Image 1 (spheres, rainbow, N blue to C red):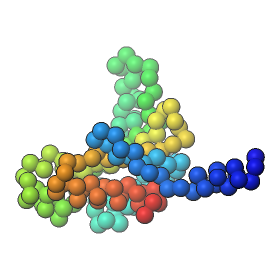
Image 2: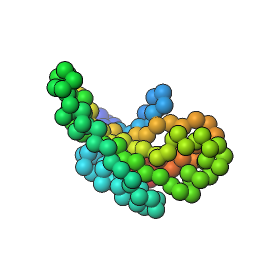
Image 3: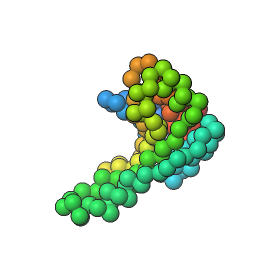
Length: 150
């Protein structure tokens, strides 16, 4: 390989992950392991002064029930959803619109898809314009911190 190709490849590896934005979804992909991203996520939530309310082991549930529902498709190697809330921020957005309750608690997922086992994805749902964008900014900060982007 030419030196310029090696330098270009090194620069490409050094670039930060940009968010993937799909309809209603914001996610980041990293080469870090699932376990490392989960550890980073748990610490990023704690660093914000928040507590994980619950963890949904979606990947395990899908694997466990795959045969029961007549499927042989492996979707995830691993996938968990972490739920948490911020009393101060939740109060603020619900004082602005009590129906923002529909977004609480806040969730961030970590997943490794079966077809791309070398990548771990961390993400969350996008929120509508208005007060919920502050919650989206919090989730983005937490997700980015989890994978060392901030």
